[in-house]
Image (cartoon, rainbow, N blue to C red; front, side, top):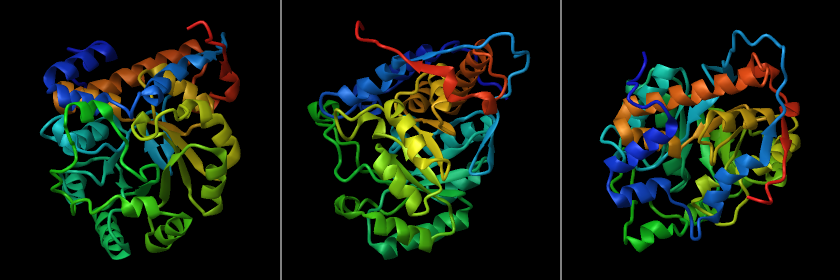
Length: 348
């Protein structure tokens, strides 16, 4: 099913999304921590990599399909977990899950949801991943894990880069606190538990659930090695969209060293600053299995609900196919590190 073609480019969707929501909601959806240097770096770092296109390779048919944890993806782009999505559109996570299903990809549901995991699972036609903010004690966590297992979720994603809620100055300047309003799960108890997490908690989660565990928020090769040593099957490279620690490196910049550190012992996914299909192709060349989009999906949700998210994914997929063809890559499996080179952008 094809979404409305009112939007012909991704920037059009962003502009429409901004028009449709209150200024404080838009700032929450797009802002970052403190000076927003990390937020800007996430996007600008994409220009640090240029393609090395190959020619005369028969790209009359381009296949963007791949897998994640053995699950099929029509293209290597998934919808990242986002909190408080009901502020962007009344249908929130339900709309995001439905859009992912229509486009043959996977939706990651945040702990910070207004819909229960059961409600989202009932509406979804696609595999779901549950993203965990550890708010309570182990009994709280175990009860929640039983719920998401029973609802049919296919993976568990532990976010580890939120030891303290970042100082998001756009929100502070407006005296706007987006937290609160949770209806789908127990209200967040405290950030203290997030701050006290260690690798022992990763081991506990692996013992407690049968779901494959994803650790989200890895930003160094050292922690990537620790993740695979603790048996984690997916390393998620992320700086939380530049919303937690200002002056963090862009995920695209640390992706290569993390892929090398993992050494094929786990799948690697990445998010942060991916706004075009060409960005996705660069991440694949650097070794990512897939890319998760958060802000771009939120903009689609703001612009036109489920239809806006579907159209966002359509345009990402279209841009990816065109970039692959013009780089001489007929299949995702053909994409390798030789496709990109680091370039100097000192004059920019």
